Image 1: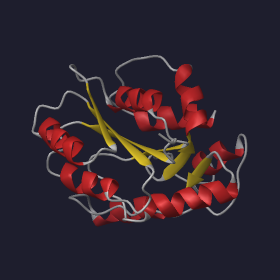
Image 2: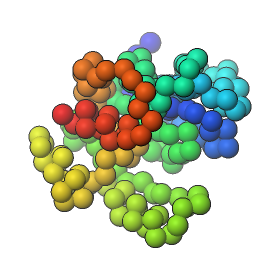
Image 3: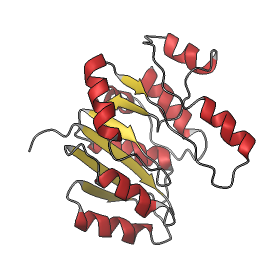
Length: 202
């Protein structure tokens, strides 16, 4: 089989309320050459059954289940290790993609020849305050420049032009795999997005 163009890694923990919408959005992408890796982090709700249902329906979906809750960090780390696509995207269980997102993002990444591409996204209010939602949306717009080296960190933490969130970017699979080779295993319930993002950018 040919190498998938994009591997989508989805850490799942008790996401039964949103998981079907998430999986519908990724499994029906206009870009056909994708693989979807669902890593169930020992969910105690119906998430494992939802994943199995979609696994049976869509050949592009592969599932991994942890017997013990290990944090989204370990789920993403396991997904990166098993990913076979040229690029990697991270999607959370309460996220969803527009139907042509992977196709558009893949084409731009190929054209620009970059290791990380920051694309636009929208934070949908799901109980958070409007003020917090608006503040988040300011950081989720696309970044049109090209950054190298320490400038990536500068524009994230000093200039605040890009956000350290994992899920509004596409990454070179080779870069991600190299990053996780150096990372320890461990339970990191807080700040794991930031930790993994910094490791990938290093």
